[in-house]
Length: 366
Ligand SMILES: Cc1ncc(COP(=O)(O)O)c(C=O)c1O
Image 1 (cartoon, rainbow, N blue to C red):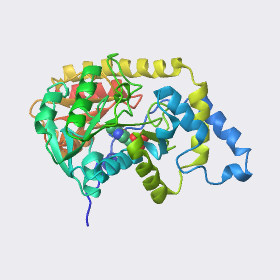
Image 2 (image 1 turned 60 degrees about the vertical axis):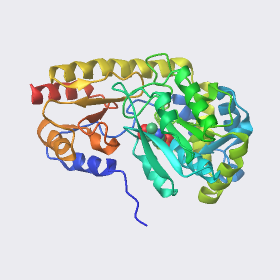
Image 3 (image 1 turned 180 degrees about the vertical axis):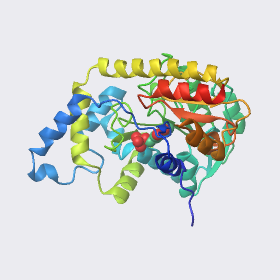
């Protein structure tokens, strides 16, 4: 069977191979520093050796699972530490589809492309629910679209690529739809630390057996390379997730989990606040450039991506490459995120050169 590979890597390579100097706004790799406790944790770990260099428990280091459980207000038993949110999403989808409650998976359009890729891998069938102009989701539309065959509803808040944040009522209603249809809501909350609207509500705030939450420190601690994430699974599904995780991975990485555990315990709120401030300033600077370029855009309420539509310049792959070659700015074509924003381009604000990128776009389109 052939599976479609997300095209991000192709674009990043194209941008790297381009002649002039190009500002990379494709990747979602944070460019700011990790909390110092991450480095301290790794150094400390390096001195341990022996048994500490052997397999950790498959479901993750107990101290780390306990730390996550306290922060999320759940039982340690329901937490599985994974190789990033990416694996947690895969385990969640597999567990939901394994329930035998149908093969249909509801996704939003626009969509984070790894979701349909994984659904495909797991033999599910993706159906798309539209979102409004700001990226908001109407749970009533989800209710209408959900059928007897729906086993899973996947949402991402704060959202990549729209920047939308779903509030507490929306999350509660989505879980309600899942309960009504005997389905599972999977809420991917990997950008939860980047909420500029103060409206973010985790699906964990709703007590239900019909929701799974995934998250990671990949973005919140600027360590996408560490591969430490987690899923919070209901009692009925947690063993399924642990077993699949064990069969695929044996276990995760002990040094990474050790350092993350130490950093979670010892990093104060100012670290996260400083990142939010940095990103909010970048959003301002980029929005200014987009306005000057005559682009349409929605100011993100969360996350670190901006979708923009330029006049007479649809966000196709060809135009994205043109922007790389002629403006020196690399974005991602909207068509990679489904059909709803095919005319748009996504820009990741994870470069110190956001202001320069904004200037370049303004000059190119002015
Ligand atoms: C919505 C979403 N989910 C999951 C991931 C992957 O996260 P992780 O690096 O924790 O696997 C990303 C990465 O960009 C993402 O945007």
